[in-house]
Length: 455
Image (tube, rainbow, N blue to C red; front, side):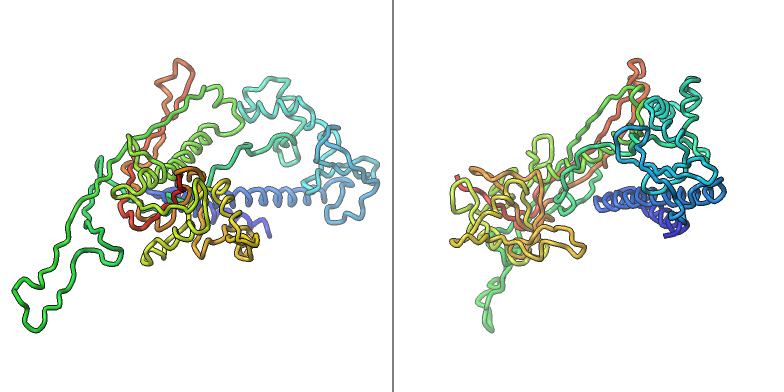
């Protein structure tokens, strides 16, 4: 792919990400798309840099005296592999004997430009790494004369400093658990400290939605009110809004000396925490100064009903079977199975018949079109793994099944972060303060069922 095409692709990805990020009320899908676009931009940026370096190296090699022609590797003589700076690593340099007797270096296996041996040794030396880190953190003007001199050794023909091998543009960290619930519940916004919704109170069956029925009166009704139907009984659902906050203090020195944008990284971690919080609250919120979750009071008033397993403290295939067939058919369309992977799904995958054949079998449906692994369906229903679901145990609720849209999550004020610089200036600190207002409640419990392990 040409350099021009790569740059156009990068601009297209940037414009799409910028448009999504400018939205006032970003959804979880928007944030996921932004992350995917950023990952795409990161990959394109590396491709652009590589293509630009190759293009520059090709031009420079053609103009150099006896340099190794990149397009004609067969002309190379006396090639030997030399480790960068004489240190153990995986970056190799090819040494080539030129026509005039001098030696030219072709850097690493990608062929990114030509360097002489002096430059290769210079950028591999610990003093150069130290100077380069100072340059990243403080800029050239704040460096000492010795550090400036050391850094000059790493100037390449394009006029920029060469990055030493140990400097990597990523921070090693764990990945967050996937969020599979908050994006499937009903998400609404509120304009006050609570939201109230009218409802019809009807619990007689799962076929009708109210007590209204016809009366077979015959040609002449016995009385004027014989066909009078039972009026629906109305009630209300009130969802209160709660406030949550979090903060972290960092010193100005940490911000100044970090080799990456520390404040931006911390804000990203704040947002990641809130995304996970929304999943956790939708499932496990206890309703005390926080949202009320789906699992807070199974079988209670206005809460999902449970389906009990047929054996104590464990899962059974009959129990799972009963759970999936307990949901009325009108809620099948959006029904999913939610459980954690490392405990509940593991236990479920081990259930087998009398001949040792697992009930929840593996097959071709375990893989997508591109070959990536996907969660196998359970009796035809999609399976969503969620780390916030309980483990299998006595009187536990390890599996949630149904249409998660029966849970309503209400956002009063979206998550925001304030940077407090002046308040803690005397202690050389900057405080990031995050805040959101969120509520949640099961509003349509009949759309979900919960597997309960026997006691």
